[in-house]
Structures are given as C-alpha cells and as structure tokens.
Length: 332
Length: 93
Image (cartoon, rainbow over all chains, first blue to last red; front, side, top):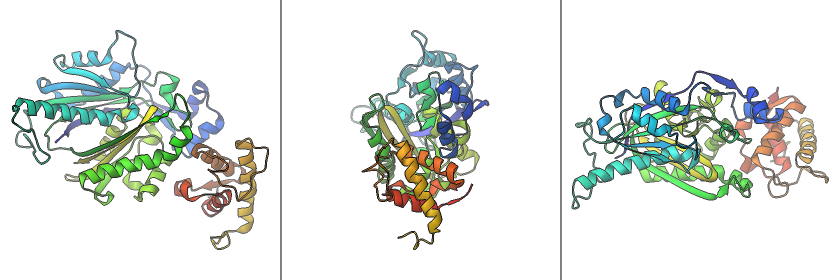
C-alpha cells in the first residue's frame, strides 16, 4: 500500500502583504479588501533570491530519511501547476536529481492537473513502485493485494522509493494570482513515497477531471463557481467511500490553501466543524501551488493533531486549463 | 420565515434591503431597479465573487461586519433572503 515515508517542506521566511501586490498585479482596492476580509489572505510567502532549483533543494535538504537511501530511489516526480517553469535547456528537476545523487532515477514532471497534480503524483509514485515489485516477483505473482503490507514495518529499509517534489516560483502574473479567488505563495515540498510502507498509508484516492472548466476561454466560469464546492465535496466523499470511512472517522482535513471562505463554506456543505480543517497557513502563506497539502500535513503534525492510527483526508483543486477535483485518505 | 419571525429589527433589515438593491444595481450595471423578490442566481446571475463584493460594500456603507462564514449561498435564493441573513448575522463594525 502506497505510503508517505517522510515529508519535508521549505517555506521562505519572507512574507509580502497583499497590499504590496496591488500595484504589480493591478488589483483594485475592493479586490485587496476582498482578499483580506473574506478570503483570509493577508500575506504570501516569497523568496526573491531563490531560484526554483533552490526552492526544491531546500525542501529536499530537510528530508533526513533520504540520506544514505539514494540508491533505493527509482523515481523522482515533480508535481507542479505551471506547465513551463524554466527556459530550455534549463531543467531544475534534473539539476536537483544530480545534486541529490539521484541521476540513476527516472525523473519526470506531473502537471496538467494544476494544483491537484501533487496528489496525482503520490498516486502515480505508489503505483509505479507497486508495479515494479509485482513484475520482479514474476508473471504468476498477482502482486500485492489491498491487505498485503509488503515489506512493512519489519523490513522498512529495503524497498524501492520514489521522491515526489513540488513547489514553484510565482514568476508571472498568472502564477501569482487567480483573479478574485487566491494569491499564490512560494515554497516547496519533498516527500518520500514507498509502495508498502507502514507510515501515512494511502487508503483511497478519488479525482474528477472537468475539462470544460477552462479558465482560458472563461465560457464556463459561472458554472465552475457554482459547482466548485459540490464537485470537491463529491470527490472527498468518494475517497471516503472507497476507504470504507465517513467524516466521523476523519481526524483532520488537509486542504488546498485557495482561501478561507471557500473552506468555511465547504465545512457547512460537508457538515463538519471548521476546526477540523487545517487552515492555519492560508493567511500567512497563500496558496502554495501543489505543496499546500504537504505544508498542512507538517502543520498538523507540529500541532499534534495526528496520532498513530488517525485517518486524515487531503483535498485539492487544480484550476486553469480545465479543473481537477481530488481527494486522498491516509492513515497516520 | 419572515424578518419579524426571525426576531430581526425590521428597520435595520429595510436599510439592508435598500442598500443591497442599490449596490446590486450598480455592481450588475442594471438600468432597471433591483427588487427584494428577485432571485439572485436565476434572475440576477450573481456570482459568488460578486456576492462577496456585495458583502464588502454592505459592510462599508452600513458600518457592520457580516458573519460571511455562516452564510450558505445555496439557501439564499432571493435578495430578500440575503438581506434577512445579513440583518441577522452582522454586528457593528
């Protein structure tokens, strides 16, 4: 079963007040007020001195569990919202792999689901690793079943791993803001994934791609606004159903940091208390692209919200060239 | 439930209605007046973003703070429904 072996997050210390972005982004006073008053976005994280490579490396540097285990890493997945982040032939992902001693790993980018690509990357990483194990066991071996813990806690140090990176520079206007909805912050995450780990095991993943919600044409913006919360609620419930759980079984929800009011209204729709959702980072970091869930995971752990055996739900929406609604259920 | 049944100050609620209809007409760029019985989505095509902008204007003009986190937009069908919500879920700002 796919599991998160270790998670590291780098958030730059610098915070930029929303008001300071008004000029560069061409925001009206009303838009700034709306962000601050209702969306709860007070400031965003930025690291003007750091390149994308720097951001990813700073996240990976915090991944103590990677040290000495580089040979086990078969895949490096870079989940990101922006399809293009560096001019050819610059390749921050390959540079990070080289510095980390992971040149032997197959490295590729997961995108096209915008900010929901992080959850997709976790799912892909786990399935690739599980597929490799099944193949190595021979054609007659059906591979690991849903109840097969694999090497598990008795053999935590031998199985193959994948490194899932996320994080982006807010380098264009489009990468800095989603009009009247959110403001993006810079940061990065690094996550070691195994196929059969015992920690933070992935119990279910659900996603729904709605290609017609394409912000480039704007034709269905009104429909998307109407259906945004119901669609997200649907995949969250679907993931819970697949895990055989209900919201009563969920200790915390790790949201995407789109804004506060969306999650306050999501809570009313889902009939769960707002304090079950880790909203701490929205006012001070903004929407950190695909890294939100990992950032909020770290916060949940720092606050002592997750005890062994607790189940939690991660949720994300990727909007842009179409929209993807995604949710994952984990067991800590 | 009427405003009176909800225990609201009818005078304050009327101020909310008057301000809301004026702001909506301007936000939506309508030449015809907006009335209390108009349906927010079907008739006025009010988006959630514009709904928040409306709340912001109401807060400024009426010097109140609205408990937007308690608002369920799906339950507020008409201008009057929203005015009742604001009158019942706001405090001096």
